[in-house]
Image (cartoon, rainbow, N blue to C red):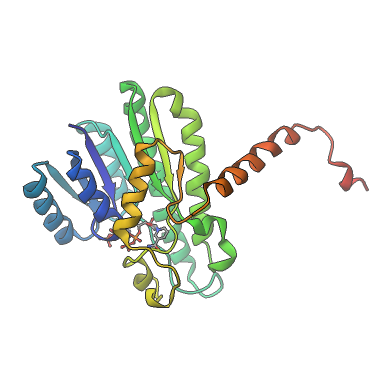
Length: 257
Ligand SMILES: NC(=O)c1ccc[n+]([C@@H]2O[C@H](COP(=O)([O-])OP(=O)(O)OC[C@H]3O[C@@H](n4cnc5c(N)ncnc54)[C@H](OP(=O)(O)O)[C@@H]3O)[C@@H](O)[C@H]2O)c1
């Protein structure tokens, strides 16, 4: 038996992850703000799958509450799988949102997964095994289509995942970036959008089941909605092809004054 900690487990993608991981026999630590929903989910999964399910109420944008979850990861029983799923968007454009909302979004989508992964990796590396799933978004590739900083926060999740994979893959830790496209969850209504106006929305069960196929295959990056894996592979190949070109002491010829 292993233990999985899922953030944002009270609804949407996180709640389905909790369900699927319990069905696979993982004990759970469920994190979000909505205690009632977490307790209801925990008791349902405990009785249905005979696993244990601990609930931690935490607003991950609050440093003290985030620290409580970091402490649980560092000092409690071992966390073998961290699912960094909690996330949100805010309504409005970059110009219209308050600075406080931008700060909130960066805390939730960037700082929280970073510090939770930081809390997890040392123990995982010492044990020589463990897994971290970071839920990003295809919007990280299409920031032009979403105003504000949501796409940028999700680009961070992918870039951060690449860095974790490079550093901790050799130490036995598997890191997966899951990049959903539009998926039917509460995130749309919460950020002032009507999901029924969005084309090509995936059902959340399908999204998580596909992400877990990618997990079982140990894919570094899983994009459930993308039909042609070759497109992602070409994108990655182009990125890697550029890298040797960065080792130049002089600017490229096209920038000659
Ligand atoms: N649905 C999509 O179309 C889509 C597409 C691409 C990526 N994603 C990503 O998928 C992840 C899950 O989102 P979802 O679609 O499942 O949305 P959701 O149904 O709104 O779920 C978001 C989860 O995050 C939790 N959360 C929100 N604010 C929090 C806070 N301050 N502290 C702690 N937990 C907080 C929520 O719980 P509480 O409210 O109880 O705290 C909830 O459990 C997010 O990272 C999102 O960016 C979603």
